[in-house]
Image (cartoon, rainbow, N blue to C red; front, top):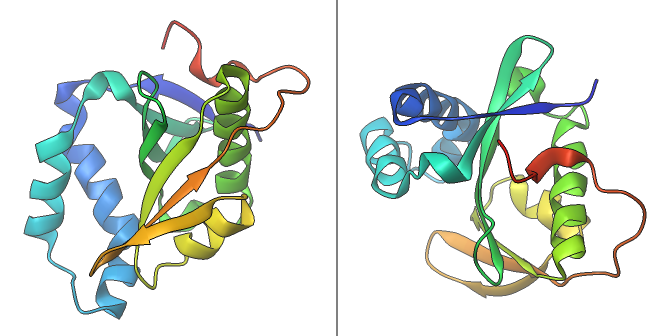
Length: 159
């Protein structure tokens, strides 16, 4: 089933925080950094509803993504799926749509991932290249490819 996106608002902040914590908990526990208060504060400090979308599968909220479409490179700030929706190809489907949009715009995509998170393999699988790392995060960039075919209307002018 294809994912659908819907706009977020400031009123959705706590629901988004809960999704983020649920999606990251295992990775944060693995490196000894699970702190729900810090996770909440870190997300809220940079939350911009106009750059954030809920991911729906059917009538269920499966996660959310946050993508700055105005920059060069495009900045994928968040891509979180609830554990029940992970490892089913949904993340790959979303990433293909995000990459197709970046290719259409002829722009690279930059993303960061928590060290030792499964997301590192995910980004490498989707042709991102590691460009730097810090104590807790690894940063990647994906250069644009020639656009082919039609782009799913994931990121139109309307949300």
